[in-house]
Image 1 (cartoon, rainbow, N blue to C red):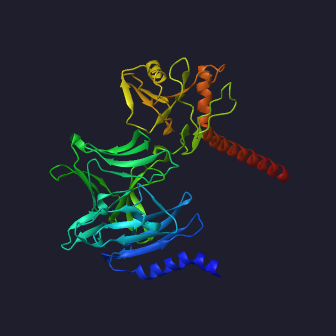
Image 2: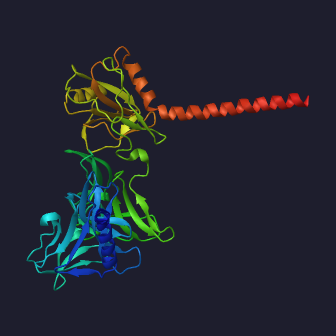
Image 3: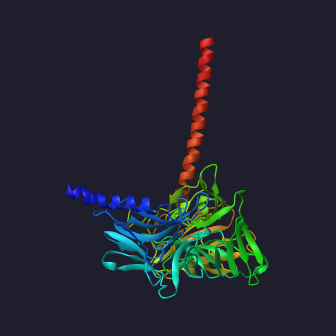
Amino acid sequence: MLFPLMRLFPFLLLLVLLFNYGFSESGVGLGYQLMVAAPVEYETDFTGRAFLVETNQTAPNFRVALSIEAINGKYSCSLEVFLGDVKVWNSGHYSKFYVTEKCSLELTMDGDLRLKGPKERVGWKTGTSEQGVQRLEMHRTGNLVLVDALNNIKWQSFNFPTDVMLRGQQLDVATQLTSSQSNSSLFYYSFEIEDKKVALYLNSGKLRYSYWGFQPSMNRSITYVKLSSRGLLLFDVKYKKIAQIPSKGIHPLRFLALKNETGNLGLYYYSPEKGKFEASFQALNSTCDLPIACRPYGICTFSNSCSCIQLLTNKNKGNVDCGGGISGGFCNGKEAEMLELDNISSVLKNVTKMGNISKDACENLCLQDCKCAAALYYGNANMDVAECYLYRLVLGLKQVDKGTGFSYMIKVPKGTGKNRGRHNVKKWVLIVAGGVDGLIILLLVGGFGYWLVKRRSHTLHSQANTT
């Protein structure tokens, strides 16, 4: 029976820890230690969590936990803060600490808070040794702090924002929230406080594209932002409020969050009626306005569905799907050509832009730039506006109304669509892009026609029987 008991040990230990520390007071002192064990064998959905501190508030309240989670074949250990069941801070948000067997939390006698793995290996610490720290506390605002004997804060979680901003928290200019980053993801999102605006960005390596922004009127400068119960407030250097992103609900806000899955930004309140957090404001309300509503080389259509841009070539009778890429490795007109899609735009901004330029010149700029993957051209009906935008990613595409003046041009190997002619290639690509919408319309029309035929047949049959 020894082996089964060894297998059960981590779970028995976790239950003991939860019993002992699930309802502790709002702080712990020097010398405090806590340990959570991991299973000997990897378990995909394993989460081991021991709560050590919580606030004395009406639910949902704040709780602090030492956690071990299974992530990509490894066990990650972190210190976490929860508001109800929502994780609002995580020590491993930017750099994960992987462990085997166990992870322990220790507030050392010299005032340093540390996470340690086997063999006393330190994976995270506050760096507050010899600073007079006496206690770890959880404030009612959700701020996790280390304080000295006079209650002066020596370290606080509010100074290390992750993807959530809590009510009462302040972020200075040049600060940002970011989505959690993993080795398997090519992209991550950020919410950034800049001098003239707050904005959302899609990041990929060194590439950085904005897809939403909000700025005060009269080009006023921002010094910091603060989340209140009624919205996100923007202040200038004189601590004067200069703008506000308001909440649209009647309940007080609890936090602002950058969604890791979509990159959307929301203001959230707690609904007592539903017993959960809900958004009273979202920066983007349409699926097609999200930066990765579709995969690369995909178009978000009017029906909020994704359609791939398929490009048939003579050398390869297959197709380039939405997950692939065809640009790169060809830098000039001898190696590449541009395929144009009318009535397609991109939600990505903050790119190289040229004005007073022709469409042909815009194409050539992308063809001569080895790193350019696509170009967006905009010209209004009067042609008093002619703008060219160059992209290194074919991403964030969406269908727009006819006559809006947008043309999206993708760099492809020369010879793509050979023997079709430029006009035919353009037409064929657009049919593919709108294929989902066209299918929906066809089904609706066909179904209505079938209903009319059946109704007429039934009427004639009834008249024949009457006669």
